[in-house]
Image (tube, rainbow, N blue to C red; front, side):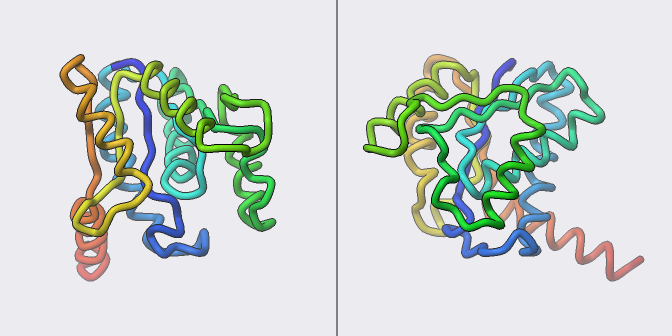
Length: 185
């Protein structure tokens, strides 16, 4: 696999309203644990829609991994121009910081948001340009924006598209291991 789409919940869908939320650490550890073997197996590009939540935390993970794997590249493909325009200042700053570590940035539409078609066009492009998806999604935790990505990826599996998921159990297991380790050290 050369190109991987990484996406999942938006921050608010996980009830995360601060970059200091402890859950982000475990989500990032879960992403890292799935990405490292793929990188060592030849992954070249991580591509994300760049929405506030899992997408941007994945970007942070990839930026850190590029220190160890300099051949790794990171891309954000947004649906429309200036997606962060209406975000609060702290989110905007975070986004600008992440963009500094991105190798390629583009938006499918050069206009500001003006319809669902922009998301549809973006998702078409993301699925066309990637060989698989790493999706942070858990149906048991309730549906959310990643549901569409999962349905689409499962349909593409027949063409050899790879579907890798991270569930809330995976993340909880990392948190439990961490807490167990810190209790014993």
